[in-house]
Amino acid sequence: MPAVATNIVTLDEAKTQLNIDSNVTTFDVQLNDYIAAASQMIVNRIGPVAGSPTVSEWHDGGSTDILLYDEGPIQSVTSVTESMGSVVYTLTQVTLDSGSVTTPFGYTVDLDLGLLVRRAAGVAIPFAAGEANIHVTFVAGYATTPPDITLKTLLLLQRMWETRRGAKPAAGQGPVEASVPTFRALVEELFSDYIVPGIA
Image (cartoon, rainbow, N blue to C red; front, side):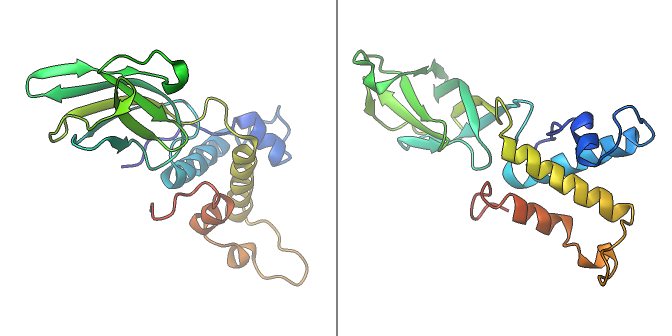
């Protein structure tokens, strides 16, 4: 089930994009609904963006690495525990190039790839075998939303606003509704560089 979205843009940013005076409050409720809808559509497709949500995942052990997340970025890993029957070990994040990696209960993480690797004295080893015995919590989304995501969100919002309010078509064109791709298709188009192949 997709995460509940935190609004990616503010009401003032939306008003600026739509050329609505910031002091005019007539459309605020409707605009906030549109912002929430646009943000949710984006999160449904590319994963958490704003708000730094905490994610909790359980994984099967037995392999040397775990793919934590297949949608969206990871800011940091909060905790990793490894259960061996009734015994639970808390793993420590280590840095391989520090020259002092000695703990047998460590891990490294590649935040860009979302890849967690079990380490013992710096060497990659398998996590303890088991079903759903590796518990990882981490912070997802961006600490600061990339400017291109903000702009693309505003463009999606603008298209939604113009379409639903029946914006006048340019000379020689049919109704706006007929020429505008579905909002889902627009999300695919705008956010294609953030979409992980094979993730629906």
